[in-house]
Length: 257
Image (cartoon, rainbow, N blue to C red):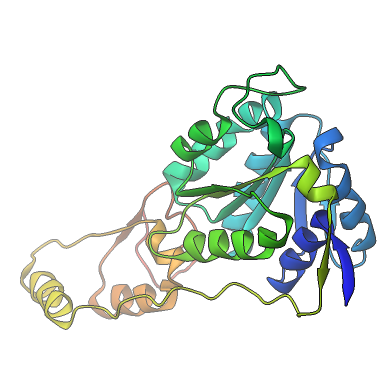
């Protein structure tokens, strides 16, 4: 039986999900999580910017460029609110972003004692800026909460998710003998064959067809399929802001806008 802090459980869950980069700013509510990050420094690269807002922007950019979830971590209250700008951008872009946020002591939640970085109903604010959010109430539940968030984050349509950690639960030790597993991906429904046939019919009958490609092409890994269709039918492709990168603008065989 192994004794692990909640912070160690958090980082081991990230490792189980093959997280290799975290964008974060330390603070007293996150001390035990940063201790665990230090222990995992050979496997997870920690990036510490100058402002919390940058953590979520960096995690969003990482997700778009690398094609895998970005992870940001900040202290509660003002730290979370500062990071909200990048989080709102990730919402609009459906970026897979895991937002980890500290919380005040679990026994003081909702009491209004004026603890450091306490704001009224932080969870409600988080819910307004994420696809899914959960405030952990037990150290032992940390792996499950993080995996549920990751699974939801990657489900269609993808989007940012949040998990809050009261600092006493990150410090508390938990006896565990089980290996921490990775999140189970949600099964995406197969394409509707009738809808695919309908799209094909519309393209065949169009006199001046244009394909407008959005971020879903990138999220679903459909770039090669899009290229094959566009090249075969010689249809120009317009990419939305979120779809930029779905096809290379340097491709000489395509008409790209």
